[in-house]
Image (cartoon, rainbow, N blue to C red):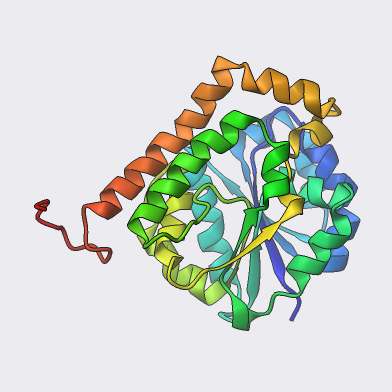
Length: 265
């Protein structure tokens, strides 16, 4: 049974659709199908691209309301898990990261890494390698490292990427996981990691290098410098890092299985 890909899609400006179209033949060669959901605003503002996507048999498409990003992700993960047999291997990814991995020099290593994953070794969480992190602006790593370090303090020193970019899991395990994922924003990604932390296998890969220069057609050094000097980008990072830290704080206030601790030392 070939794996299935699961990717949410929010692209009201039509920026990602051309990149998705470019790698669709490669996706069709690697995966059985791709489960995707489109936000209402994307369909409204990009009707031609929405029609194109609906006309591709490879994509199993659903629509979702324009709620918070975590709500869109959670709906898609629940729908995909429900549509598949429990043993189906699902690759949870994002259009920008997958388009970059398949459209760049990383294509071969990406396909080799992810297609070798069978149900018996899941769940697998892919981490950005040291080389991949080096390509990102320094503020990305600084803020996300805060979450990783806080999590490690709570999990006996184990470092996990709570703002993850790619995960492989069976449909049955995803179906069992999702009732415990309740946050409406991106911090739901951290909830998923906490729900799986004692099962996760971690693999570091170079193909999770920074995708924006490729997607934007920009010089990577220049764009990196701009992002590192941008206060707007700092606010963007804090917008998901702070809620993730709150998820970890809530976890720390329990014994790890939902029972409240007394808060004494």
